[in-house]
Length: 492
View 1 (cartoon, helix red, strand yellow):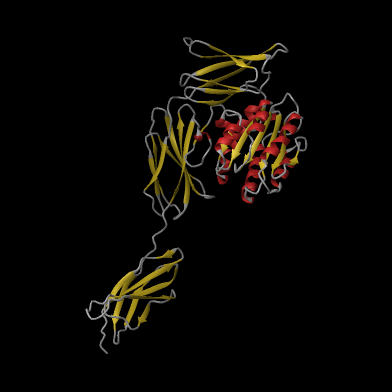
View 2 (spheres, rainbow, N blue to C red; view 1 turned 45 degrees about the horizontal axis):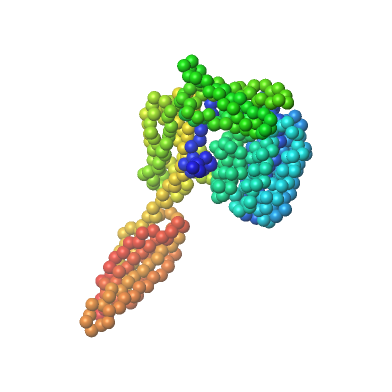
């Protein structure tokens, strides 16, 4: 079954953190060695704004890494009608020049000829060092990328790890088959205005592929775990021996043999909240390899918040609710909210017994991003985000409308107004349908605009029982009208 929720969506996405965080700059990132080729969609289907955000995102994503031979080498290949190599893998050996190049890259426009660009990518990565991990990071809007299944398959068969970021409206089926498993850490679908939210997770995925050790836990659930490593062997002349066991002495050890071209495996039927030890032995008749080891702990069999909802929305406040409550596992809840796109983020902290709160002092008619995070006693965190809009402020009506009748079917209309932001008034009057059997029923209506300083007007030649209405006009629209019926005398 296609797991569309594996893509990251800002609206209603659940963010989970691994218990082992390796994203912090320092010795870990300094020990990374590998090649990262950026495949950047530069075609006409990408707006100038979107292209700029993608290139800036790439710059921030790669900023913590050490560059050059023995570290990380970065290249940039642009996708257009004809592929263009913006810079090769050996061009930049320090962050200063790389950051400058990524921030100054110019969009090409043209067609989305991804297939031709992938042919160039295959050649570039084939010419690089054989004993280092290789990553192709595809940044795209996903609009009609063409037939990329075959070239992507060929790249992965040669040991290249394919990761993809699509700006929401991409073709999920194409992207799903393009990336290297697991999808949870290698495929990201995100709104371009919220792309920063995936920076840490994507950087962690790259680190797990190219940094010093070779066996990583890339996903953990209550009953399963996905392990990943850089392929070391060939398909027909070698294999891997996998062994794993829980720390519980009564649990048996599991042994499996994996093909030599494997680079990941999923362990299933595990116990929740249990620590496992894993060893992976590459077996080859050509050379000896060290055994790879890793430990991990499965998640506690709880989840939350599973539901986040908004209610009682008003111009300056709205209520956020979440659930289910899990006081035996959750230490506290944190609610973060801010106006989109660049409002200040407010943070509220609640104990494990509270499941709702009223957000106040909000801007009327504004969209807010609200995130509820559950912080567990074991250090794990889960979160869910929703978007919600405050109501537009009510446009006040006028007060104290008075209609004074005069002679010759004339009336004087007066009103009171004390509200700021007035832009004028619409005054309208309607003639009631004639009820005389000798007169054909008719109706008519007339309206005039008056400037904002007006507080009265004189209407001429009104029929008997004409209904007079005055509506205030504001910047945001027309307020509610107030009306009176004018009893005029037809006699002269």
